[in-house]
Image (cartoon, rainbow, N blue to C red; front, side, top):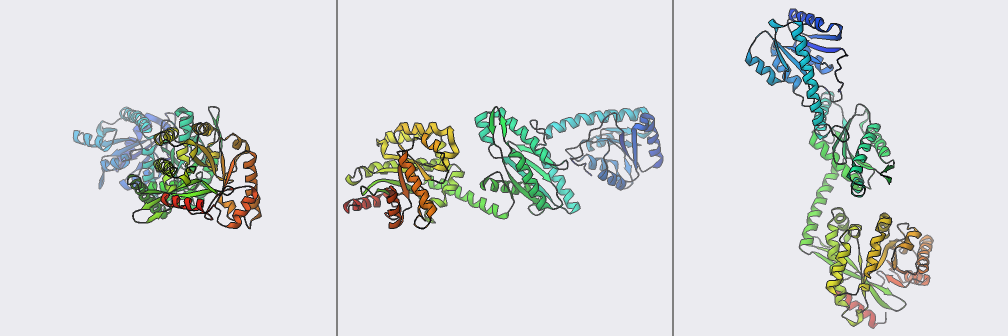
Length: 581
């Protein structure tokens, strides 16, 4: 009964006026037809439905500008049909009720049902009918404008969330009748927040408008597109082969949205994460389809972004587990469930421990001691890493200050890893300053380790931050060196004192000639740039001999010691020192 959202053709006064007359008395229809011909001539195309069911069938399969409905239609009434036609909240209809009764109650009933006018047949003439239709069409035009404003996004011109939900409801009803499938495709931009934060909201709005045009370009006229809010867009699309069609559709959109842009004289690389849910396989209600496409989109983001995923029930379980881990991490922070372990770094030339790296563990009340592999990624995603990182830094500094009171450890510094979020935090410099000042710990006892991948991602923007850290007097080390394909030009500019060779190169250095060459090259590079080089992950005497032969004498790994609590570290260092290394 409801007109499709896709049928949005406006009524033009110069076009043929499509009028459906629903009248069970042929004589009354002929009279109305004569009046219409007198008023409009050939500009009116009049269709007759003599029964309620005929009217329903015609309305389901055709579009009309005006509906003239008789009050009495056999077993049904014109009020019932009027309610059926006007029940849509996203489409406006010009309905005029015709009756043989001049009754105020019927007039009110017709108005409440959604009719725009009520005419008594005995008073009907061409002029009165033309006037009623003219007023109904004018009111229809005004109401359509109001509906459009209420159901369209003013920035992009696309349908908004309200209209999308209505369209989704309609699509579900159609799919039930036709027993077919369709896809709900949800997408949002991968770096929209960065554009807003760095280039301003005006530029962000421009990006959203361009995105809307690009999506329109990638879709078909039969697809329903909406902006749900922020940088989130939604599409309803139907394909003959739902799986293959949805995949190609998503790939086409990703290709279009990944094309680089220039906004405010800045090159901007955009991309999108897409989630797809299919009716009825992934849901039969608007709520379930939107929720499941959203879960699939979330999975796309976690899979590296600028990609798409179909909904999988496993996503919900994963999200539930992620939410549980999020809550448990907050409890761990509040209840101080984390502990630090320390792995010594040995200078093999002097047979002396020079530093110890702080490595976090979670003393879970039910699962026991957990390695960071279990929780760090989750902490990074939900920003708990900032709180955890602050605690690690403060506790490591305190432990270092305590062990330096021991003669054997007075020159042993501490190395602390900085997560990407922590490194980019605006509070990092102040946090370090406050921690050092409160403890009166010598700045050069501190080494902050930042992964090479993090440095490559931040590039030029964060070199100033590295310089500020260097100005504090702390040492800076590049962790996992060799995995991020550093530019030599960048490396020369980074104020770092130490390179840590990634353990992946060391682990097979005895048997893999490529790893052997890479390790030797890194050692030579570090020496040529006057930087210290640490080989981590050394587990055997043979590995140790190889890196020592390359000229690398700062060693970390199980060959000397596993990570241990601070009290065990004190004992271990004393024993190591007493044995001469």
